[in-house]
Amino acid sequence: MGLKIDNTGAELAARIKLERQARDWSLADLAACSGVAKATISKIEREAASPTAAILVRLASAFDLTLAGLLLRAEGGGDLLSRAADQPIWRDPKSGYVRRQVFARAHHPVELVSVELPPGAHIVLPAASYARIRQIVWVQAGTLVLQAAGGKRQTLQAGDCLGFGPPAQTRFANETAKPCRYVVALARS
Image 1 (spheres, helix red, strand yellow):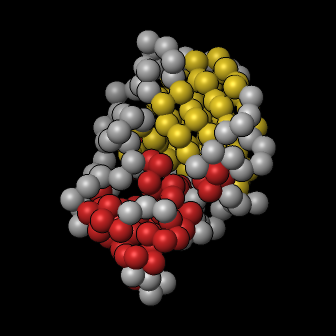
Image 2 (image 1 turned 180 degrees about the vertical axis):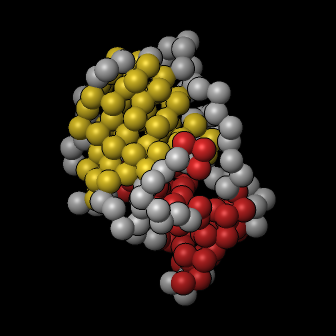
């Protein structure tokens, strides 16, 4: 996609620490609620480590937020217009997955995310990522393979759209040699 990655690391680290402190939680408390190691959380808050998407989802869930909600709080924004140049972009350091937050506002029930999954890459998101939301995935280019824990394997081609059912750990995979681009629409339930 030729995307320029913005520098949200410092804002994200500060937001995670702020969310933890606002709840009067210690690092151990957040570790217990999220299942993320205390040392990892400390490194993230000090900007000594960059969190993966899966870790961010666990932290967001512990704060009773979606991943987009946590990123939105870190990046700010309250206007209903979401200009392309201002849409936050984040890259997962482990998979190379690139996530553009097309639209998300704390006071609006719908979020829109654009994702590019590199060739051969995959990401596993825990069931907590889907708590309190309804989600639809719409493939724009390439092939996306989705498999929920214990569920049916779904192969989506460009133009295919899939609505998610009950929350379950889900694996998103690009098993091809070409990038896969897809759009995720989320509605808070």
